[in-house]
Image (cartoon, rainbow, N blue to C red; front, side, top):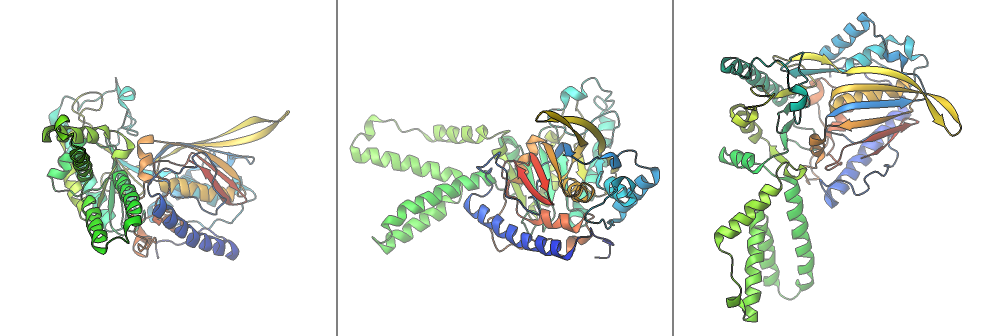
Length: 486
């Protein structure tokens, strides 16, 4: 693509190894999803096998702490020219050619420019005296701040009007494949919009978490079709176990087998059908025993209340995540712009529009930089102390930033460093698998090459998520290979 003028330099052997990894990773992801899609890995806390790439993590990080035996002093005191060059490279979507290993990182202007480029992000609205991420649970931090719009309806309308223009601009960029993804952060939930070709989907997708029964009912009333991935998994497991039990009787009668298949298809219609069938079968069994008159059958109202109680139990939990696909995302856009519960009506966040976070510029956005600082410490190893160095990154760290930072740190730190990742927990569930279709091409294709992020990062984000409800907690890099824990 013409917009990518330079790529990170790697030798041919390393490139071939990465290509082999991509094929193996895609196959591994398919196998994982087909067995236990969307669930958190059972080996939580256990390091993965070494790999030349780590899986995409769609959670937003609030802090990264990199450590290495090699100094991070090159990341301090960025010159004005280097900062300007990094911003220009970001806006023009150009990438500097870095060698596999840099012997003197502090003398490398290209490294410092690339580092500055990886820290850029865009947000709306921008109010310097308020921290606009995270928004969930931020009331205490915002309490006592000057909020002139709280009691001024005219000012609130102006803020929401500008926010709607920015939101629409972002969606149009996403649809044109000029923006890979963006987040809408409200005081109650977060929405992740992803372009077609990312996350293992060939259509635009939107994930909302956490949700409530009231929000889901409001979406239904607006005609928005959505799925609840974890509920689909539960149904799939139930149907799989049922079909396994029924397979022992498959040879008894061909007609009986067809009836069973029809029953399974009907069970996929909705969650509540399964509960109804269980109730009916239970009372049929009581009738066969001749004690049906002694047992009081619950009426329809009791059954409905029971179903509603089950739905409400999911509220505010990761399992309440909702998936919207394709053209329904446009309906979701209009729904969110007109949703009264999108903005708090009372409290420190009253009248304040949601925060929009994006890796690329959009109408009304403000360019911001993640905060970075390096620290030198003495770490005790056995009976003596050894020099250790750390680099701290703070801010709303999106998936592309984590990957870009890791790529350039491989060059700066000779392929050896570790990272501790602090995630915004409500966004960890965005790593849920959204499709079991193995025919989907997990490649961003040529259409996304102008979306403003590195092609290697695009290749990573194109794969189907495989972390479930978890997010990456630690990364270990040794000899340019990754291991990670969730």
